[in-house]
Length: 92
Image (cartoon, rainbow, N blue to C red; front, side, top):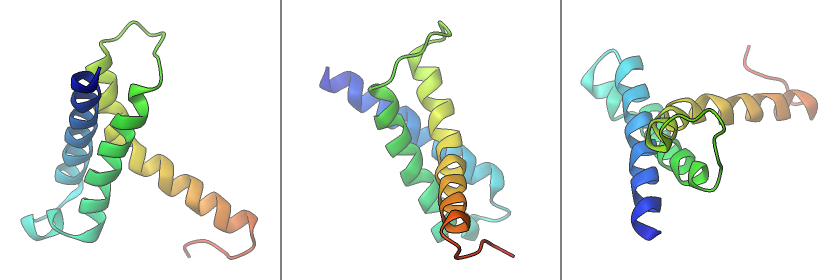
């Protein structure tokens, strides 16, 4: 069980790393806060995905990677929506 959890977390981290590498325009940007946040949130996404199930019949390791790749955007969208709903404005 612990081995599988580690595998999902690692796949999520790799998804976050792929997201950071694809969006970075230089190596310096890979080390920026935005990229590191994507990598860390990817690992968190893989960890969370471990506790979720897919009904798409795709390999769970692939889904953990995809979840890790997209999790940063999901968290940022929730944050922005919360800011707008609380009347604090969003990014202009």
